[in-house]
Image (cartoon, rainbow over all chains, first blue to last red; front, side, top):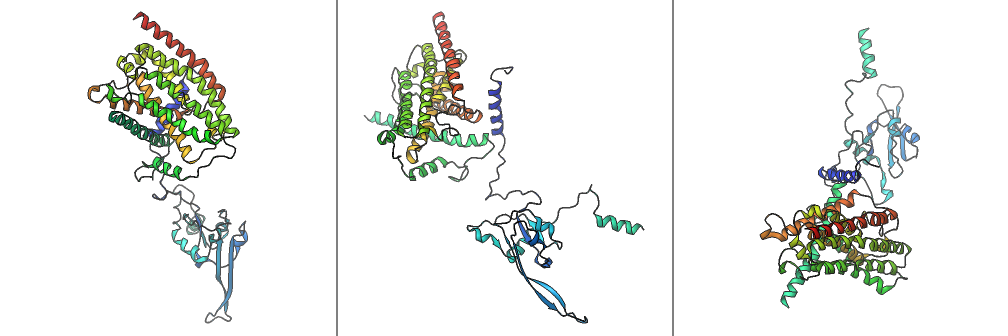
Length: 169
Length: 317
């Protein structure tokens, strides 16, 4: 039993009254842009110039939603004995109806060609339209925010400490 | 003749506007109490036209009567649910004098209580004619609830009628004194709570109980008929709030009541309606046995005690 009968009832009324006195936190989405947290996983953008067609992302993808086509090109370098070979990206597509936004492709890419973008407004009426080709993925690259600054209290980056040690020697 | 038309017109206007105001207030108040915004788009400014939009939507819906339903009864039930409250509004005085009430009669309280009781019949009709087990369960719950709560409802109203020595609603307000707020407080609480149960508002919405009985006796209703039941609920809030105001809160009495007593009645009615909405947001639905326990072990004894108290004060003073 409670100390005072009806205390719980009064508390219920008080809680609702207090909530009413505060402003609602609702963001009226289509009218007001939502405040997304940093590093939001909206869509995967492709920095095409960095891609070397190594296929690591496509192999690591758990549900195989990345499609890559390429061909080899010969580049004649003046002064070199033989022409060099270079991979040229023909097609890079991500099927966002399959993608589960795990981000493994971004982790796996050794050349920093894939990035998270906070852009999320790419819904389609047909599920087949969610297969986005490289030009669309490249466009999303413009929405990728700059990387967050380092934590001022944190340890320095490995490169920095190595450089400092070399300089001291 | 013209006088009658004007009076009826006034009541119909009140019947069509006050419930909408209360309904809109419920949308917004409930939303803000739950940390939401509520309707924001209909009518451009803070969703003021939401209920009108709802009404238009309900009108457009298909009118379905289940194949096994008892057609005439099924179609009549929403009207029977709505009409008693319209009739009850006719007798509730807004201010002193004959011009502030739809139809001044000497036994206003008696008539209003009798008429509001007809709502039970509508619920039973809707429940039985739907040919649906959930409707039937809801209807049986409603029967148990409404018949039980009718008793404290009438007893607490009888207490204030006894205190005033009249059954006329205007007479009760005229006899009302501010210290009655204390004297009749138990009766007021009992009247308000059993009034909530009479109009089946949460936390007394066991006949509807959407988490247990689909939608109780409203399960099979759609479109305009369903809208009628919804409207009946909102008019019910207005009627119960107005009755509480007139019987226990002194109706049009208040500071500066000479020129604008009717405003006091409206303000008090809306204040009580606000409490009705507030209670709905704050409390969960009672269990069926808790409902009966509250009625028979709390409300009925309290209202009987209040009757004894009222009689004692009347005899001694």
